[in-house]
Length: 171
Image (cartoon, rainbow, N blue to C red; front, side):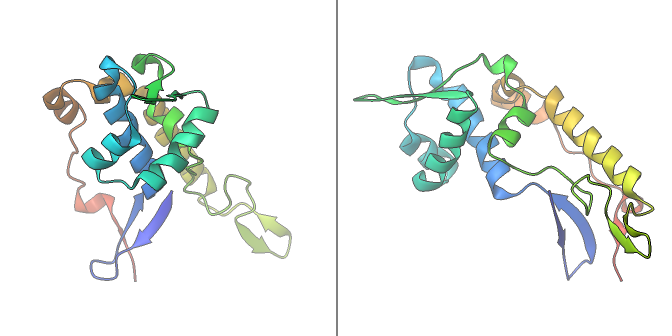
């Protein structure tokens, strides 16, 4: 995860990088359109507005993690290797090497330098707990849930507005 600082609103927000978001989008597309046979990356590229070259990189990683398989030849493309109900968003995100960590120390506990050496910062457990909750949530959402009928997919995971009290104010 990256912390991106918006200089205009000065709100600190956490975002998944393009790699993770594009991988999830591409896998949803594959799940929705793979019922009749392999899906070409060019077709996913066109529908999702992701370059074929970038999709090739992502699908190479997804294939190595045994989430998809490639089919060569005329009419070739990619198919899901497992049932969409058995693939979580976390599986997809981790397959493309997307870091999901909001701690400064990548969970190592060496967040802050002191006279005693590198030690945990005073908020380490807070951020480590947030990491666990993010991963738990992403593990709880299946590709099948997201690839269902468009109306269901959009309403089941509707974004709730973040209250002003929940944002971090920068100085």
